[in-house]
Amino acid sequence: MTPYVTITVNGVPHPVAADITLAAALLNIGVTAFRRDLDGLARGPVCGMGTCFECRVVVDGIANVRACLAPVRDGMSIESSA
View 1 (tube, rainbow, N blue to C red):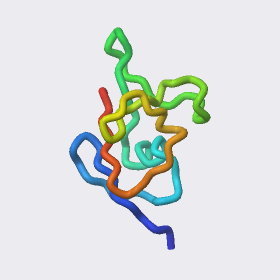
View 2 (view 1 turned 120 degrees about the vertical axis):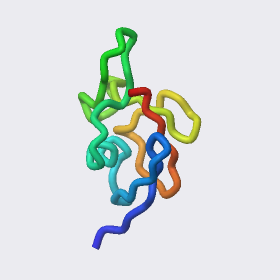
View 3 (view 1 turned 30 degrees about the horizontal axis):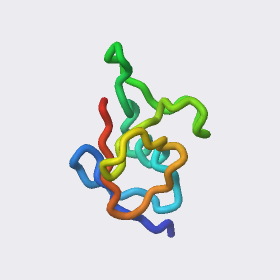
View 4 (view 1 turned 180 degrees about the vertical axis):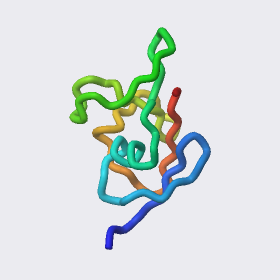
């Protein structure tokens, strides 16, 4: 049985698997647009390994966290700009 943790995404709590990256968790709960570019277009994970910077979100008030590199942990608060 996979253990779960609770993360809060844009003010809404979600149970997610405890052993995955934040990007995987966000995609699993249906979040595909992690941020907006300068033209207002939605952006999401592209490379999945921290090279492209498209998966940046705000985690616990810290901006520009690459979700594909951050493991989930119980109580995380995530804000997307999408």
